[in-house]
Structures are given as structure tokens and as C-alpha cells.
Image (tube, rainbow, N blue to C red; front, side, top):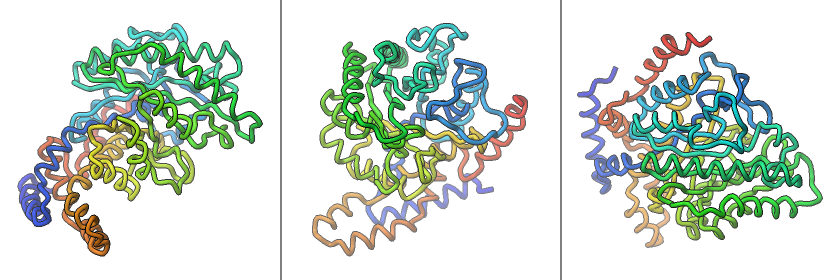
Length: 421
């Protein structure tokens, strides 16, 4: 096992090496500490929620695998979340879905109120977590035909509009109580499995529904509204009402956040490249960081080239203060707490790698037209001692460095998760 002394000694050498390029590693870590990642609650229980003891089913949401020990109650989910964040450097947030309300089985989604989330907010206050929120527009009898806010049925549409209005009130309550704006996101599964004739009608109805939901102006210090598009989903392979182009236009027109989900685009599209394009017109955006494998499959985030590119764009464009970073994956085939830890630590690693770039020097070389030196330096950066800086950052954040966190997860599995079977 690497000792604290070894980590500090190795870090000194790494700091000198980066210093030769004009990079201040201590400053990079100070910047990183300001970034809060919003961890998604649904990784802990396979997108089940607490509306029914049987969890959710259908509606284009699917977690694969049956690893033992998933959270069955809000208290278990909160305990698992606490364990996960204790192994992740920095102070972060919880991203909650409406279906995690504590209603004791009473009422429907259009009747949700802030009081149904009082337990979550009190827990967040005690642990100094910020919170973000999402409406749950799937896996419900009134979403059975694949349409919600864009439904041709006025009654169905009215129900989901009421749900959206309720969610904004809940998000504002969370932001007000916790003293940090709650990003409240809207994603709907609406679309057709096969080729539609009328593409216009559903989108016009979706706009009308969103206009009604957003008609009440809420203090942005409490609530930040976001809309999330998609290329396709299960049961909406040929046509998605809330496409990227639709929501981009809507966000720009209404001055709200656009959510870019890295699993919601074609595999050949680079989401990192979209950031500077949309932020030329938007003040802030929301990122849902996932990992698609051949389709929108929401795999655990790893330190891939795509993730590195995303982080580089946030740092190079000086966007960190204007981008809200959330995670969105659900893997039930491995230990769920480990999935949280792996994905979040990789997101933070990618940001640290980007912050350790000599950005100004690279930009100067590029401006001079020296593309040879630009490429050469980018490749050399890949072998610099980033790992030494990461281990030191973990050490100073009082969380395990390297893979030492895994033994804690295994112990928690043996002492806690195994008792749930």
C-alpha cells in the first residue's frame, strides 16, 4: 500500500515537472475543489423509486443486472449515497427524481408537494449537500402509449403539465432550503417506434405544455430550469418529439438551461464540440455525463477519450462556472456504490487532467499557426505524471488514494448490503 509520505514525495516531483510547462498544480487543485458533481440517486436502486414496492417497469428505462444489495428504502439509499461520497474527493450534490418522493403510497405524480421531499431536504441540510431534481415522465399508466407532454389526449397532457408545475415548486423548495439553486430538469420519452406521418403536431403540443409549465416565474437563486433532448430511445427509435434541435431552440428562446446528455446522441457525434456552440447563445447548460455503448445504454463513466475531451472543453473554454455537471448511468451488474465511486472519480480525474494542461501556452502556439508544436505537446502531456497529482488531491481531501477505496466498498457490502438479500 502506498503511504502518505510516498504520495507526498511523488507529488513534489510531479509538481516540478508540470511547473516546467508553466502549470501550477496547487492552483489546479484549488480550482477543482470548487466543482460540484451532481450524483444521480437512481444508480443506487436501478431506477426503481419508491412509488411501489415492486419498483418501476417499462417506459423506456431499463437497468440490466441483478447484483445483490440494492437500496429498497429512502433511508437505505441515503446511507449508500453517504458511503459513496465519503470515497470521492470534493463536496458534491444529489440529483433526485420525482419518483423518489416519500408519499407512503398516497397520491399521484401530479399531486406531489414539497412536503413529500422534506426527509430528503433535511438529510441534505445535515450533510451539506446541494440537490437537483427531475420530473418523472415515464413508467406510469398515463405514459403507456409513449406520449406525455406531447400527447394528443388533452387529459393526459393536463396530468403531465400538472406534474411539471409540481416539480418546479419542489425544485424551488429544495433550492430555497439548501441555499443553492436546484437545477430542475425535464426529459420526456415521447416518440414513435416506427416512422410517423405527423412530426409537427406533437412538437407544437410539447411547446404549449412547456409554456404552461414555465409560466410561473421563479427566483433563479432557487430554481434553474433545464430541458433535455434525445436522438432515440427504447420505443422511440424513429422519432423523438423532444429532439436536440427542439430543445436547443426552446432553451435559447426562453433563456433556460439546455441539458446535453452524452448518451443521447449518435455514437459518431462529439458532445464536447457542442458545448462552445450552444454556449455562444446560452448563459448556462446542464451536462448529464454517461457512457453509451452502441446505443443509449448508460454505462458507468470511465476515463475515456470522450470524457477527457468533455473536460478539456469545459476548462479550455473557461466554462466551469457556467456548466452544471451531473452523472446519469445505471448499472445493476456490479456493486452500485462502486459504480457511483468509479464514475464520479473518473469525472473529477478528467477535470483535473484538463486543469493541468498549459492552456494559455497551447492557445498561443495555435494562434501562431504552429500546429506541429500543438499536436506534439498534446501528445507529450498524456505521459506526464498526472496520477501523482490525483493521489495527492485525494490525500488532501481525506479520501482513499488509488484503489484503496475498493476495500471500503467491499467491507460495506459484507456488513450492510449482504443483509438486504
